[in-house]
Image (cartoon, rainbow, N blue to C red):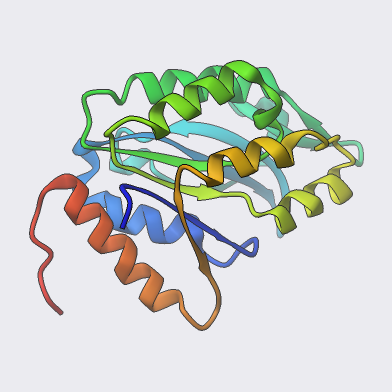
Length: 202
């Protein structure tokens, strides 16, 4: 197994949850970022980028009617249209990656969207993926990228080539409804190896 492991799979299948559960016991040894999903009722209204620092702040979703008012929100729905603040995501992602240099594991949850069109972001990602640092992340699949393009009407042209470039540097596992438990075990083993602890059986 490479030390750069990414999960891909359908939206809502639990990719981020599996990673969160695996790293929480070792949160002090982990850096990077995750995506906070913002809901209003059952409707997804936005996304914000958050650093992985404290267990109590590692919350994957919240309820908030005004998604645009959430700190570091980089994508939100407003008047029926989706607005993407690429500069916010890129600036914060690069910051959180650089702040994790002294950690044992970096989490990137998630990458693979419009940020891939930015050369500075791509340079940062390729640098960390070519390093010795163990990386665990969520990768937006081509299917989900196409869905983003369709639903949000955001121009994802140009992302596919850079996505392929990233794929050549990492190991990708696809989660389905049938293999969720085995993927969970694989992720747990990866995290334990990165942190340097023995995984207890059972």
